[in-house]
Length: 220
Image (cartoon, rainbow, N blue to C red):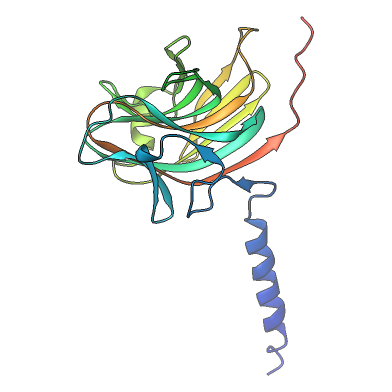
């Protein structure tokens, strides 16, 4: 009987442990119900079962399309889950990017999602509509073992601080990149992509961000 008073203390301790697991300082960018805070061609983007769904399973996507954040970000820690469903194999999340005027494309950094002939490109850093190449990636054999099978959720994290960009896939670091070109913008919008090509859906959920004070460039 004397042990009973300790139970409330045990529950309190468990509550404290649970509170510590919360991501301090993060703000949700998706309410799970609407596309509030984002802009794009709504025929390509919708909300289903608490996720943003881009693309279709019954027809091709004619062009790359993007659902773009109305807010711009510079230095941040961005986290989200994504999965691919269908015949296609390519999507991604733009950051420090902008829409190209009077065009369907965006220009800027992309956290890539999908696969190519060598295997997965999940968590690779691509330069969309600018240098048009992979800027950094993990060893292919390793990242092939880190990614979950198609149709299952993968967790991604993008940390951007000044010229340094780091990316993680399911807790494994895939990118540690430092931008050397001084004229590359270090701020911009986010964009959820569905790539042109075969019928494909990319699902996005749990999109949240923690921002930091923008770092000043170091003197040469």
